[in-house]
Amino acid sequence: MDMEKNHIVGRLAECERYFSLNPHFSKAFAFLKRPDLAELPPGRYDIDGSSCWANVQEATLKDLAERRLEAHRRYIDIQSPITGPETIGLAEMDAAARALPFDVENDCVLYAGESKPVTLSPGEFAIFFPPSGAHAPCCRAHGGPEKIRKVVIKVAAE
Image (cartoon, rainbow, N blue to C red):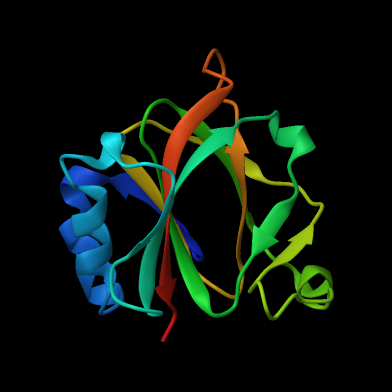
């Protein structure tokens, strides 16, 4: 487990230690532990209304240098690969990035910047906390596939 100021990277087998960080985390991680997760079709799955939902995705992975960082304000992201490894760039937004125009409707700002790569395998997850937990998702792991299935869970940052 790796814990930084705005990110947590861990294993699903140890997720209970993070339940106290947000009232919706226990439901979010219960979804990630579903035995049928790999069979779910891509799309949105409600977990707890607008406070917590999952998006099962088929992601095309690119090199980290090709991905921009993103950060959110209203929602925490919990991301977990299902079918193969995924590298995600981790960064903390600096003052200049925080001043960029923010897309309120999509709860997102995209920007270029340096990040530290972390590779997640199935059974692992990363949590990105707003407002400074920036991340560059959907990056190809060294020797990994070009496409994977993954889950992104949105949790209200209350």
